[in-house]
Amino acid sequence: MGRGHANGVIGFLCAALAAVVALSLAPSVLADPEPVAGRAGVHEGVATCAGSTCHSRPVASGLVVRQNELITWQDPHTEAGAHSRAWKVLTQPRAEAIAKRLDIGPAEKAPACLACHADPVAAGQRGARFQISDGVGCEACHGGAGGWIASHYAVGATHAANVERGMIALDDPKTRAARCLDCHFGGSGEHQFVSHRLMAAGHPQISFELDLFTSLQKHHDIDADYSARHKVIAGPVKTWAVGQAMALDRTLTLYGPRHTGGAFPDFVFFDCQSCHRTFSSDDPKWRPVSEPNPGRPIPVGAPPFNDANMIMLSAAAKVAAPALAGRFETESRDFHQALAQNGGVAAAKATALAATSKSLADAFARHDFSRAETLAIFQGLLSGETAKRYTDYTGASQAVMAADTLLNGLVAEGAIDRAQAARVRPDLDRAYSAVRDPNAFHPAEARAALLAVAEKVRGLK
Image 1 (cartoon, one colour):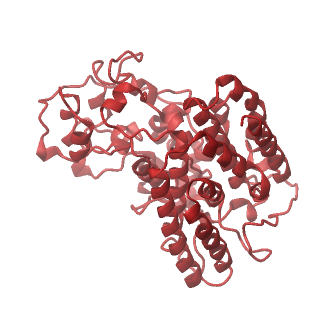
Image 2 (cartoon, helix red, strand yellow):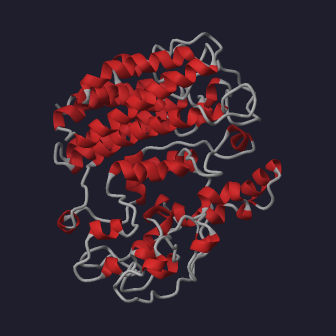
Image 3 (tube, rainbow, N blue to C red):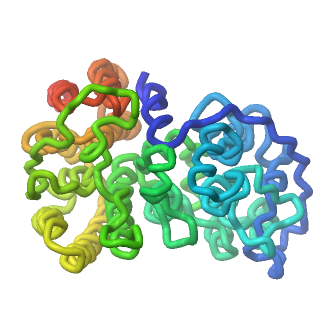
């Protein structure tokens, strides 16, 4: 089943997705291939990309790019179409109930929602075909096309020239992670942060894993033509590692400035289930709100920071960036301890740890991960002392997604064959089942499932 099996987990982690309403996309009007300087940064709208000679063929039959990218983006049945459904979700009962609790007016018009469920570009930067109801359209990720839409299909067009004219270089994993995290965790933009207040009103829990999310949203093929256009080919393991480092850097960078307005930082930074036994108000079953965790030296009862990315990075750093691994471990523990002291100390420790996370992102971006290193990270993540740290839903679910990413990476890079991967899949599917529902999450069961995966991976060496 593999990544298709992941969809149930991703569906909970990202959002409750509603059925898509098919968009009526006008054919593309091809302009003069010279960029129009006065339109640089203008978001021209999804329909501008939708001609049958551009990105809206019914099947992938293009010689250079698939040319069915719009159809994939609109897919009503898979996570590939989630971005096109993002605005439509705001018209559904759950979103209406959230907006009512927050007293922000209709969700489909509220800036607090549109910042991530649409392309919230200013009115003065919207072209004639731009529609807010398109949701997270092409330009929300690729950047306003006004300066490059004509030049990018011209004879002799280069990726570098498109980037120079305003296209976002999403082939670079650091750039892509930064773009994705603006909504899949939070950014510095107005309304671009899912606060604890928003979650308390009913917003789904947020989670992010760059390579898995990239695979679910991929609209392109990494082939000889892709390489000939001088695009970065990072590979799944590097993409995963960079994404983990960027996610932790973003979390810690936002930690200090984002607070509830009172004495406490925003609770969204902490592990939800350390305070909430379940996310369902009608579950009468009692279970402990937290377990002792060897990676978090904090007093009993203190809310633990969501350290899922820290656990992933710890395993990756020991293998691929050993010069930074010791510092990262020390700063991680210091940060956890500081949270029990006072806000000033914790903020200072967060800044130091964020800087090390940035260094890890840079180190991983420069590093080529070998078969032996990927297998070592795999083992380090799922067994030994690291396995004891999966006491919370967020950490365990990140570990399962990481295992999926690393296994697929080994296959994609020819390090193992599909038959070898197939022998691991049943145990990986059981691990996915262990984290499918946070209300039914039991740490011991999740750890046992992950250890079973590790045992199978050990046999791949």
